[in-house]
Length: 192
Image (cartoon, rainbow, N blue to C red; front, side, top):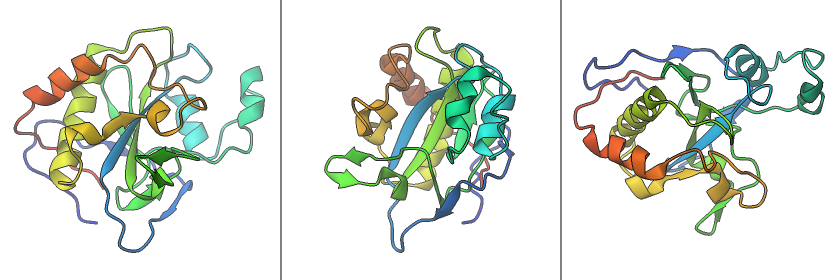
């Protein structure tokens, strides 16, 4: 898929290729964004362990909680750091492995037709103003590129996997996010 650019208002995400992706089914219509939250280890808000997990290089011995992640093959299309910096791990045309067993409005396998955005955070700490701003900007750029993604089709991981997933959690203020999204009119970001 060609890059998308409307204006140069925010920097292009850094691209870090993940092997945890594959081709979408033929003829699929990308029409959903799923927001996630991640913290590795729990309560730590730095990028190195997340990048290692998403690229298949996580050292299971680096932290006791990583043992259960040893053979996990997961990634998202994008990660928004606490500073607002955006990293891209999978091209938008490809299927990232982010939602797992999932269902939205009766349609199974959300990875087939969605884009995944992880935000560095957990259930205990508020997300940053930069994360709200940059996640909204990224979502607006994706909405311009994929017109079937409406505001109502930006949801949480807990919405597609209730009882199994908690994220982005109670710390994610949806009203704040929707206000941020509503203020963005002319946005430019280049992504793969």
